[in-house]
Image 1: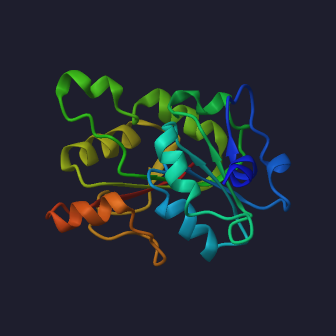
Image 2 (image 1 turned 135 degrees about the vertical axis):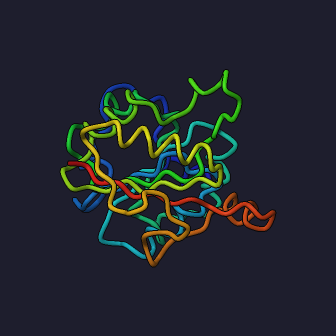
Length: 202
């Protein structure tokens, strides 16, 4: 397990993470912000060996859970960055280095006094736009209806993104090979349906 951690996990990150130096093959880079228990970052790359993946997760317990689902032999195109991501993203990844982004069920911080802690703010979207290639897509999901509306409004306010769906919030994912996270499965079981959004960097 320690050897696998050395293979997969980048810790104490300072300055830019250079994707070309992390992977054996230079391939389009996709990132997941908030990898949780690791369902997506362990399963989706198996379906897309032609892409490289960086998962960002700041909580040590979750990083350990993710590592249980990874092996260098099966997922050589995956790395985990142990880091909480917000507007600091533009200081971590080079400009125009990311081909796609997945953000699934971010913390909704439902109380109004905590809304300033929400990930989706204009400074975060500007940082996201900075690291993304033109026409790269952002896939977002949340089961929290009010937060879904907040996210959609933040994207609409930002001139560097456009929605690829009408209406902006959909009941089904935009990709056929969607991977349900543990959290999404549990919330569905309790009757909370996800809201899916898809935006493009312009």
